[in-house]
Image (cartoon, rainbow, N blue to C red; front, side, top):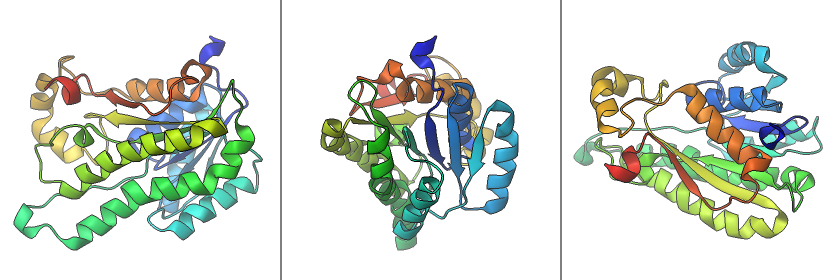
Length: 255
């Protein structure tokens, strides 16, 4: 259906070399978009680009997005080859867990730099390319990857992570109001448990219990994340902005 067709569009997915970012990048490619993926490690970029190449036109650009300078450089490098960016997925993120009495200042700096500040800097850096792609009938799209841990109190002592994701959800709403008149939508996806490196240890230890908590009684599948990315990036999602969409089998809103 052309309602979900992304042919001719350009998308950028940060943290696109593994986990949720890789799932989203694959979905956007399968819908027809040309996709730039970014990650801190060049070798991870090369490996992911090779894996994704079977689905479409993918380019990897290594960048450490914990600094504003690298956010600006990524936008500049994409702009060297593209006049427009139709979709920006702010997915790169980090987590940290430690008991309250031991939780270090470094955990706040690392996690908030990547999870909350980087999406703001990236959106600002890509704004000229997003505006170039935008129209009233088919806006440019910013998709922020939050978490259900920003919607409810998580069971683990990940203080900076849950705070950063709650902040990102609200930043999404603020930017949606700011950028709507420029024909750019800004939405957030709040994933629940999905197979990823970040979730691997937790799922290994508690996967069956977590699945049992969900009303849908399972962990997320890659297609679940690919699908919501394509929806928000395509004409199907053109009138949606300022939304935070849980993709979690119901855990964040019913448990």
